Length: 331
Image 1 (tube, one colour):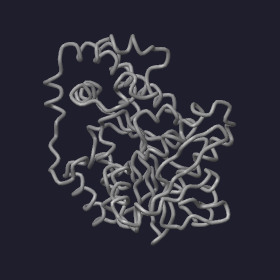
Image 2 (cartoon, rainbow, N blue to C red):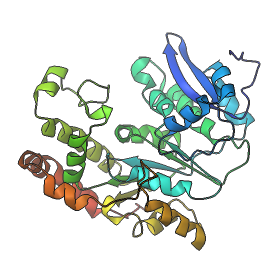
Image 3 (cartoon, rainbow, N blue to C red):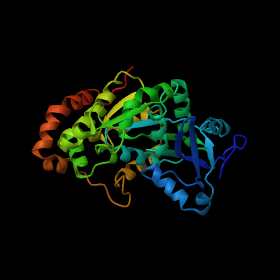
Image 4 (cartoon, rainbow, N blue to C red):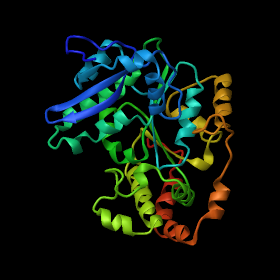
């Protein structure tokens, strides 16, 4: 189903896919049918949309410029907050807590946002202003108020997106953010047990700059993962003086850190709503049917000597620097 420039995309559609070509980019849309955006990851919500007959049958395609038209026509709400993280450190827990609030939309690790964030890699020579306009439009498109307006809009990004934090701040200078981090030994152990695609050499373009594929594949897994995690933490630390940033340690989630996060994001849920958030935190964020089980101690105890060595030599300094500024927002 193609939509021409004269035919506006209906309000109950959301961007599903972004494809690039020599002259720009196109957007494929999916009918959301009024579904709640409460899945741990946005792609899971898309799958639910596509299981519906209407969602399968009608998938408008437009030039990327239609995103701006859509945002203006539907009074799209900009994000109230961004969530950045270093990987396996409670970002899904935090985003799922906010799905417990009424009139709240949470977009978690949308592939479309990832594509537009790195559009300059796919379209060399893309003007910086155009890049920012596309990024703002794709994020705003998830803030359409149909079928009913909502009061809060939270966007969780992928771990590697912290290297584009500067671009996101330029594009959304009014939006506060948090960066979640965790003791790097625990993150290492988690990724060694089950790596995300971005942590596999050659599986994505988000690797270590200057490191060729052969070297990445041949080095010990602990060392390669440590290089990636070090990049994430260093990128976050580069923005330590931003008044929009707040650094939060996984060890302080959920109860201890929540008041600071809510204050930083200028949100004031009532006592019953906070209780619902904390109840949500007692579930496994990625498998909501299961209870949450604390695993920091187990991860620390099960770490191999190799993991401990690279953690001590490559990661602890950045982690300690993050610990030193946690809960502190720059003036």
